[in-house]
Amino acid sequence: MQLLFIIIKRTELLDDIMKSLAASGIHGGTALDSTGMAKSISGMDNLPAISVLREILKGNDEAQKGKTIFVAVHDDQLDTAIKAVKSVTGEFDKPNAGVLFALPITYSEGLN
Image 1 (cartoon, rainbow, N blue to C red):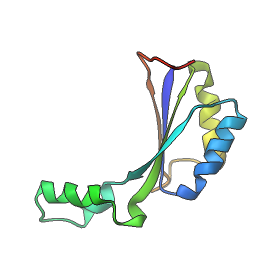
Image 2: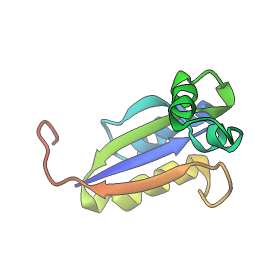
Image 3: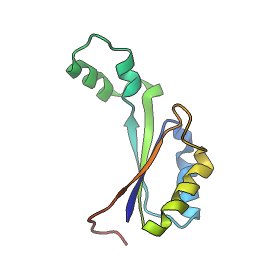
Image 4: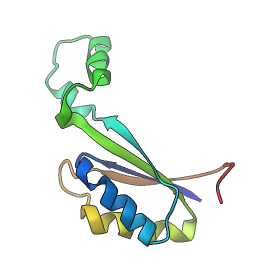
């Protein structure tokens, strides 16, 4: 099994991504609010690291907020899931398009 992560800034795409995954037979995804780090750090040259992290974790800047979606898929479903996501988002090769990656699941309980 694989754990597919989809990190997007265009939060308005969330429902369409979930619908596309479901239509492709992929179920059980979870979405969380997330805040990007790169933009926060780029404008903070002289602040100590703790202050930078504190600002990032506040999450006050709407432009830096996004969604992180993760869904467990069987190995043979991974390509299908990726195609379902990209049918909504387009390719991830443009700046700020998001991030898409998968990690192997070496142990799980409660997954079918």
